[in-house]
Image 1 (cartoon, protein in one colour):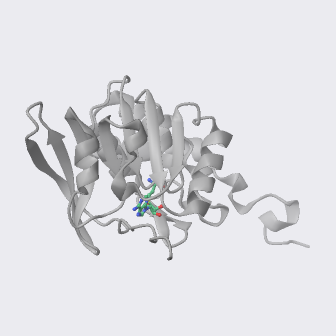
Image 2 (cartoon, rainbow, N blue to C red):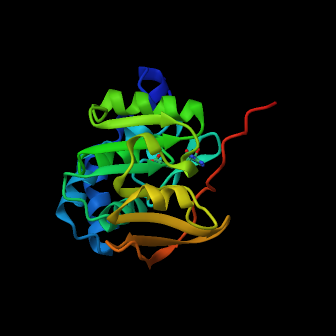
Length: 231
Ligand code: SAH
C-alpha cells in the first residue's frame, strides 16, 4: 500500500526542501543578477534562514521571488526588495538603525548583521511577539530590540538614528522619522498611494537639507496608525 508521501512519516511537508540551496539560488538569481553588489548585504542574505520567519503553511515559498503572507493581512517583503532597501542604507557596522514595521522579524535579522543595533517597531502585538520569538529562536535577538507601538512616531527613546528603514507605505514621510534621523543619515521608505508607491532613499544632509532619490516602484502594505485610546 502506498500513501501519498509526507503525512505517513510524520514529517512536515517542507521537510524535504533544501532551504540552504534555495537560499544560495535566491542570492545568485534574485539579488546578484539584478544588481545587488554589496558583498556584506549578499552575505547577510545568505546567512539569515528566511524559512524560520515564515508561517509553516507558506514555508515552501520562503525563497520565492515574491512577498509572502505572515498573518494579520501582512506580508514579508520579496527578498530583492529587502536587499535593495538594506543596500541603500550603506551600513558599515557601527550604526543604530530604526525599522518601522517589524512583521516577522526577518528584515530586522538581516539588518542586525550589518549594523550595531536595530530597533524595530511593530504595531500589531501578535506580530511583535512573533518577531521576538523568531529572532530569539534564530539567535539574531542580541542586538535587536522589538518595540510594540505606532512606528509613525518613530521611537524617540532611542533617537537619533543613523539609518531608518520603513517597511509600510505612507502618503508622505512621517515628520517624526525625519526628526529622529541624524544629519548625514539615510532613510528608505515607500511613498505613495495604498496600491502603488515609489521606494525612495531620503538623505538628510549635514545642513539639514533633505534629498530624495527614486529607487524603484513597489507595493507595500499601508502604514497604520495605532488606535487612539478610548475615552
Ligand atoms: N519587515 C517585515 C515585513 C513588514 S510588513 C518583515 O521582515 O517581515 C509591514 C509591517 O508594518 C506589518 O507587520 C504591519 O503590521 C506593520 N505596520 C503597519 N503600520 C505600522 C505602524 N504605524 N507602526 C509600526 N508597524 C506598522
